[in-house]
Image (cartoon, rainbow, N blue to C red; front, side):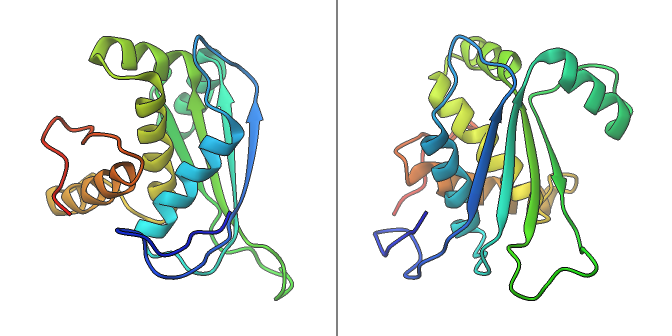
Length: 173
């Protein structure tokens, strides 16, 4: 997907391949095009410029619980998990480098949207942007890091007309 200059998007083109696997769907599941756009939006606001590949896997609560238990030692499903690819030895110089995987639990994201009174598409966009930023090394463990990550999320979502997911007014342009 190519991004072109606009009011708040950087003035450069970027292409990131996004592969989507639907293992589970729910009352609402976004299109592949929407998921790809949200991934790319997160990468643009994070100023990622080298291209690459991201896998987004949409799963059910059972698969998410297994992953969350194995990788985070929390024996319960969660909304989104990210698995950065890291360095891969022996990759040819012209190979498309994987950035990592974002795993989203359809039922949890849809339930959260309903509980929080948000449009399902808006909450899905937030979870995809959030998970993609984790691939880029952003986290929310420390206050300053959380503020930086949230600012990028707000910016990426604002570009799609989505209100600040943290409840405050959208940023001014």
